[in-house]
Length: 371
Picture 1 (cartoon, one colour):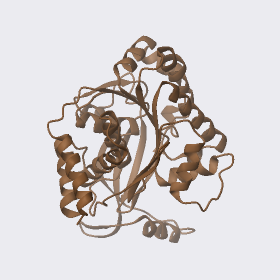
Picture 2 (cartoon, helix red, strand yellow; picture 1 turned 90 degrees about the vertical axis):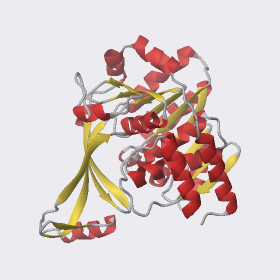
Picture 3 (tube, one colour; picture 1 turned 45 degrees about the vertical axis):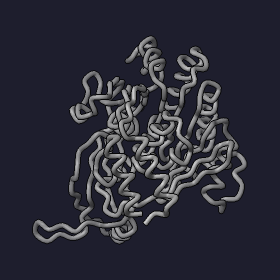
Picture 4 (cartoon, one colour; picture 1 turned 180 degrees about the vertical axis):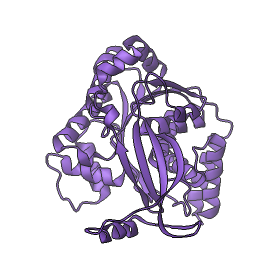
């Protein structure tokens, strides 16, 4: 069971969601994928299937095929919307926000899979989507992606496809602007810098909140990583900036710093070093079992609750970001922001879909009951 203090925090947070009416608009960009989610079959007898439960066992199986070849059978679980922008948009729409999703959802015609996006989402599609095959296990996922459609997708194409005037209207209408999936868009830095130079800066300081998510930067050079950290920092002149990373991404970004320090440092220490190398309001880190934030006031950490039998894993981080963004727009304390982030992610992973406010409140109450 959760402690009395923890139960009090969760209970108060659940009550804040009751009868909450949201009227804010959100702008999220700029990717989009068609995701195929698979279970990986280990053994099969007739129609009965046994799946690999963890990545390490699957890795051992693959290693054993070296020099021999072999077949791996997959079982399609779901064909769904993919990409950080569409999944975060879906989560924000489910919570009740009006969302402008600017992404690669099909051009000139939107792909059928994206027609299932929440009715609160207004789609602005700029290019054709990438394709991802996600192998899901109980301890994580392996994603194999074809991002070739993004090769020529840059700031000039964004302006050409949506128009600078319309983009400016969307920006002015939005209380929070999220730019995500920097890694998989070859010209993401160009897009983020173009947005800053031609939209954000000319409009001046409007008190907006900005959220950035890099995705796994292991394929990027240290120089490119340092460059994007500086681009993100520039937004701080015009609003409250948060950079969100998972544990693996924190390690990679830390090692890309010019003087990273001790590689054996804790995840918290690495996050603090990244924060010190930037000019932002918050460094948000969400390992599997907890989450924490580094701000100028120090570090705040909250323990999480693992979902024993996940229905879905792909998109958990995007739903965490949505829960955090909800709390951010409500101007809640940092501890509450972390709790809502983990609760939104947990509800999504447990139920296989993004929660609405009622379902999010129910998850908080179940967290209280089960500890």
